[in-house]
Image (cartoon, rainbow, N blue to C red; front, side, top):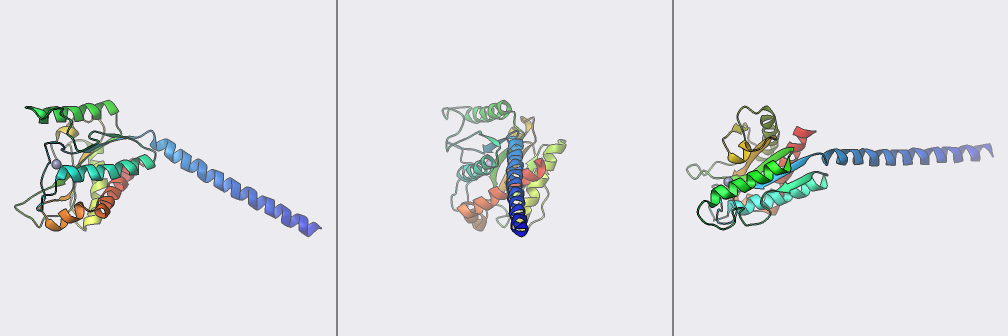
Length: 225
Ligand SMILES: [Zn+2]
């Protein structure tokens, strides 16, 4: 009788411990997501519309790859509880009609979205090209000179992209409108070289785009968390 009672008590205690653990993990998950909702990330797919950006050796358009990687980043950040804002949501540019001054209007619209979103971080996604040296490959991250937080974000992402490419390049400073206009840490990410035939083929594949997006996402989390 006593033994039966004892095992019943042990059973109840175990069940209680299980429930407590389960609710604690739910609480922790909820806390993490609640914290992420405090973060807004602006994802800026470079170029679009009449501006294809650089063209790959087999004709791949930078603007298309930029948008595809941005869409993958959008899912990653949304699933993690971030608030996500896209400057360009489709193939079109942000300039209205492709008349004179379209490039300026496009950049001003991007600035408007970035400033209006009050972001925690800004990621501008691009692809590189250097036809004079077609052997060049790998990701390259840029940030505004003299901005410490931006440098830390850039290095965090660069380290992950280096792990993917097997290279050991440093994040570099650069003078880009979308970085200059952001008050929050902002980086411009060249995911790889479309002037290298092999990397162009990888960059247009869904599997490699997923890997690149995962690395960028990890780099941002490494910076924020
Ligand atoms: Zn570009």
